[in-house]
Image 1 (tube, rainbow, N blue to C red):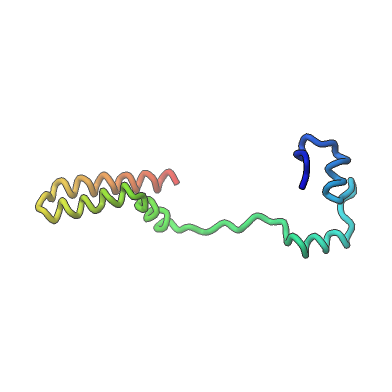
Image 2 (image 1 turned 120 degrees about the vertical axis):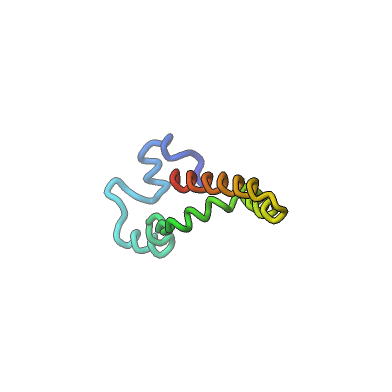
Length: 100
């Protein structure tokens, strides 16, 4: 639609392309643009709880594989190996939680 970037254009050209003026928009232009484009606002930030942030540290496929390996190690009698893997994955999740 526009041939050049706004920051490289003279002010008068930018105002012309935006159908505006140095004094801003006229009230009827404001209402028309609100109807066409909607309100100019940034989307609302989602509220994330601490539990959600902590649990999201474990959605990485590699972490899930390590959790499964920990369960399998425990089930085949390698309790020490299973616990070591679980502790390392938990520490990794805690560090990721603290960083985030």
